[in-house]
Length: 360
Ligand SMILES: [Zn+2]
Ligand SMILES: [Zn+2]
Image (tube, rainbow, N blue to C red; front, side):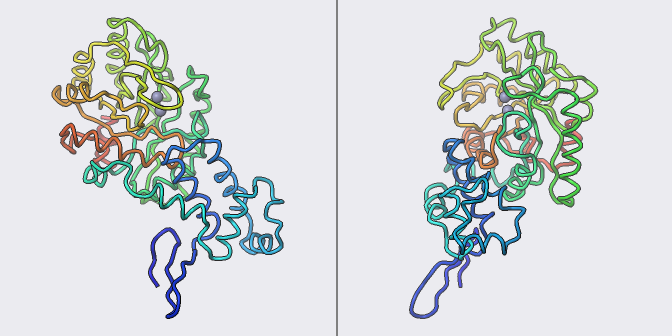
């Protein structure tokens, strides 16, 4: 018998070769969703698989198996014909057809380059849960980060002014920190979900969260999300103001540009990049290499300028769904192409060094 990973096993009994599936229906549904997310398929099509996994997770395996045999699995709330078919195959030990197809389409590195750097990354400093505009619960993001081999993941939901993304008030953020503690208690120490925020940089360069709450976090990413077309001198003052804030650790997607994708395209903001990157060096703030294909931020010219200015970097997924955590592949390829020394990339560092830097 040969294990091919992800619950699939090749069984040879002399006369025939067959493939069995042993990981169970929840794993099959989660893996399908993961592969669709990393392949950037439409969120609405993926949600059904996440919802179906959540629907059967609390049920005893016997009950799920009985429903498959009696043909009543689709009577459960949240299970439709296609998710029911996946569950039925998995319960019977058959590789679900949809899963096999997605493994063939979407498995393997997302980018050919940057493989050594990707292997050197220990975690990710930028992701969103369904507490703001992400699609999945906090614990699902954490589980997937563990499956990807991360030592840590910083949860960085949005700040209050970003109302379209359900930014967290100080009160909601305080509640979220209790949830992060609870998740870590259950995970038992090898992996840590770190406390963070993607805090809006307001027009005057101040940060959109109380200093008291920012002080309670492990890592803070500061990003511009509004008035992206501000005049250059004002935008430079705004960004440098945020970089000077002693709480700021990472400057998120610095130009705000969108180069592709269903949100359309958008040009880079105008600012004095040299002044901004010099401020990052002076105040020990890392420049984010945002891995999302629709952002590719900073553009190559600015990435090289930040490199030559002596900046630190953070290669972040900015993921809004678990499968997007894998998009670090894209950022690693760009960092490698730009010849950035891995030791200048803060998420190659062990957790203790990262936390000492972020809170020094
Ligand atoms: Zn952002
Ligand atoms: Zn973000």
